[in-house]
Image 1 (tube, rainbow, N blue to C red):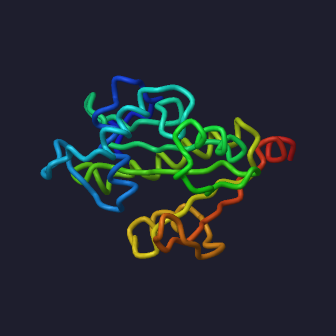
Image 2 (tube, rainbow, N blue to C red):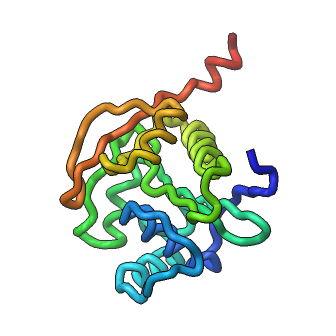
Length: 189
């Protein structure tokens, strides 16, 4: 595991790089920074705007940043399933319901292409699992595009199990869930 990677809570100042990473996650493509293609897309501008704002699904408040040599190289967006409706309402009615109330939900995980294969995704997932336990969730879930073999491999390696196939935003996904060990039970034994 790469020791010069730091995981920290996101800050509004991370918006520019974070918006590109969110765009990357939602479009199932690995990107570099600065991006090689024109990213003046309306969607990226919206992501950047909402990232800076409090209390919505894309807010910095729900994002953990992976940083390498003081540069943002990855992120993970996650939140409690029972908060999803409130977070979605702050954005608009076009967002689909993805999480269950009894689970911590990983909405987006992305790492820039040139920072890949260093264990960053695994470390970000472990951070989300710690957050889930702190918030008293006993399972963590995510949806991954069916054809995203690299992501499927990562999640399976981290003990996430496919529970169903589903459609979100007119794309086919598999829902994956991991049951988290109850820390209180483990400490009592």
